[in-house]
Length: 199
Image 1 (cartoon, rainbow, N blue to C red):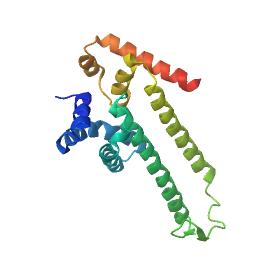
Image 2 (image 1 turned 90 degrees about the vertical axis):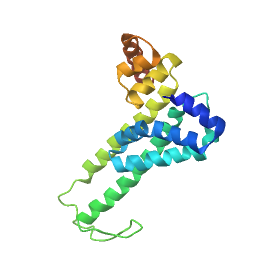
Image 3 (image 1 turned 60 degrees about the vertical axis):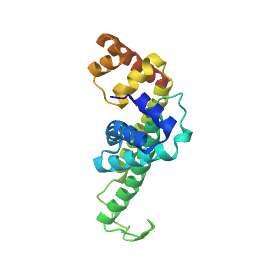
Image 4 (image 1 turned 45 degrees about the vertical axis):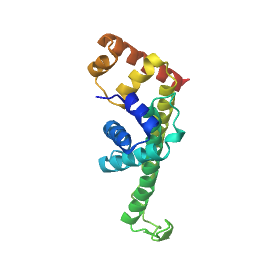
């Protein structure tokens, strides 16, 4: 079975429908799973994954072959996922207002019913949740950047484990390295990422 690198090289060389399709179906499962961890909505995750892979076709000239294709795609997907989360927060906020009898226009402006609507409801708690979500998403972005900066001996293995969700045994087989070596490199890679994020 062709690897990501082989499929990427084929597509970059031919730009053919068949090579794009092969790459699409190779990347999509892991990409969808990664996005779902962020948005917590399988249907939305699938839509974002498809849109991200469409950008693989339309924006491939922006890809730098010096880096793994998956790293580039996952960054695009991460940014798109954040956008969807932001939109969802806005919709959730409007829905919450409606539940408390506040009339909201299509443009998001409060029309009536605000006075007394929140007597028994603490908005601070909801806003605190949003702040926690934003902080978590920011850490995702920082982590992705630090993964990019890892040495080669750590980066691809860490990507396969943390982003692609591969099992240790499968990574060991893929790179033809002892299982303990794989575990040690992943542990060290994660430690480096944490050190950089805390610096």
